[in-house]
Length: 272
Image (tube, rainbow, N blue to C red):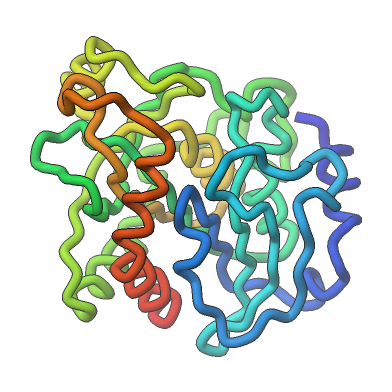
């Protein structure tokens, strides 16, 4: 990845983002944009005003970075993300973890909407990601190694922090929300998966499938961030459901589950 891309992008942010360390960063995926309720917004910048990043083209992604106060903490909130399938390059996909590294944030929470592979899952369920399968093999660390992005061969035995997963479970219990844990199968998109692919991912141990999160998680972990991720099951994956899969149904499912999503997200930020 091109370090100059990140230098130019970071230079477009207000100085307030770097005045003192951010305590955690949150990436709000499809449908999650309205779930976070900060106490105060200190600064805000549109993705369209960040060189090289540009406005997200995915419905349900607001495309805005804000610096917030939440329960006495400084939180950087990325409302939406860029995806590998958009053809914008790894730099745009990994803006969130790289900005957080530069802001001095030690932790990052990723959220997303996914298809349910595990037959026990239903639309509206919340799943804490315990591990992932990179089904396409590509990742943003391919290329020259930069010391600030971690070791040449970073350990990925615990991408998703056990401590933060436990905090998410404690939050869910306190809020009376049922959550599970599962393995996220990452695909490049933008097509939804075939039934045969879903059968293969299930045999590999996948519980949910999606087109985001994993590149950010592995890059952030390599950089030393403590990472957690939560998925909202928006639909049943191909072959499990007989209905065609449509992005509009993804957004409808997130709207229906917004109450639980908001309780878990905001409760977690109070505890973390």
